[in-house]
Length: 417
Image (cartoon, rainbow, N blue to C red; front, side):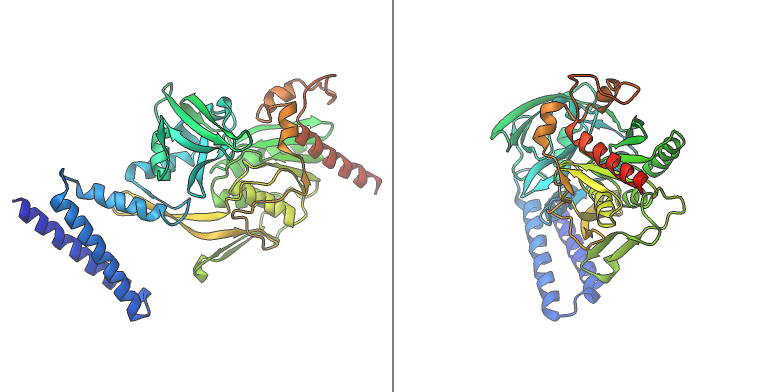
């Protein structure tokens, strides 16, 4: 019976190989490419058949295939990954703004699991994790060779359970251990939207979700009614989100027809130029955009569009440099593959990948942290008096002060003209 099972499995694999070869034949112009593909798939078939036949324990064929797919995708780059049906469902929940876990965006940098950004107001943020922290252990186990999917599974969990992370922090030259209690992560994409000084408004955008563009427009309309003449848009520690949302957010601040972002891939069909088209745009006031090393992906698209179109001044430190597009393709069994299909380029044709967005005005992170925890804007603004003057000896956000000064100076210049 066991031999029959092995034989049937082998025949199934061979049928699969033949199907793949015929289906993909048109994609390979040269005969040697077809031969190389055949040899490689034959090698895979040989290995999986040997495992089924000789491994010390029975192995589920789906587990083997899933494991192989996971390894294959993770070998491409730090953002491509295989998603099991469970992973795929969780990813769809994430984009709607509620999930269980730590509230941390992670990725691979130089093959090491790296914190892109802790999301404001989450357990990871409260614990003190920082962008750029290298996660070397999860629950005491080394993360060497771990995939993104595996890491997410280890970090996720029910509320009120805990997980221990060991991270290497380059700025301190040592490993730091964190024991963090998980929570139900409910992310409100806009954390703060208010007039903070005279007629200057401040919006803290935490993440790019499906609902963000409508929420942002609603807040902007309200702020205009309340006398807004200038804006500081805070994208610090915003790990990004959906490409279309980043485009729609940028679109609200740009004149119709200007380039927002370009995508460039291996094939012409993957290339695309996004141009502003909004009928309801907010272009008649000066603005500054705050960024730091925790600003990634969608945040970098917005910052790049604002900077290159000279719509506003970028203030802070260099962004993370996560400038690639991942396309998710569902598979028949409910799983999916997420692969990098193109890179982001700013309107001035600058690549975001690995480079990030360089601020127009650099204000070093250390100066800010000496003054105030920049993720505590709510506490900060509660201490600001109604007339906009800060109390004596009060701590302040250095980067924010610079951004306010830039917007205020532009307003004064406009008034003189």
